[in-house]
Length: 211
Image (cartoon, rainbow, N blue to C red):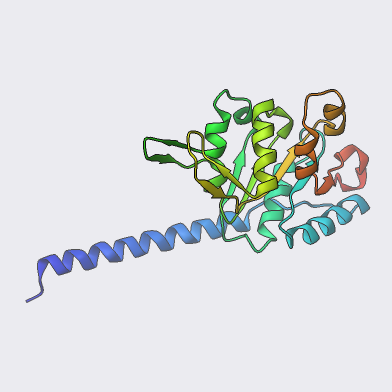
């Protein structure tokens, strides 16, 4: 006679395997439906080629363009074309960067031995996209610049160095060079973020792509 405990365990494992298959199929469908930068204009052809080349490196990419030009879509497209595609893609919105406790959200915390992983750590091995990076406060700019330079950081309240293994892609609708000259953005951070700058042209500059 079959053991009831063994039968229940077998059924439980079968249900779990079925659930995982469904989740994987759903994930594959979502990935297949990810929007891609379309258009046959010279600007879009050049941008796609630049993204393909950038995807094969680990350098920081700065996407520069007006609001609504699809910078987040392009960041995800870059991630999906890179060797990191199987790892997480984490979006940090401009609103999150403006929060008073943004450093805790971004870098995580250590409190009495309890760890809380930040968004950068959640993206380890993958890509973290900082949307509207100009929203960063001065203290957070300093902390991020130091982390990118050292390729490691400490959690808020912690002392141990955490390796920075996520690729950082950022977006901005502001002229960060002007922000630096006017004292609102740190030159050291711009230097770290703008290793590979990509300009995203608005649709009105490429009307042939409208159809």
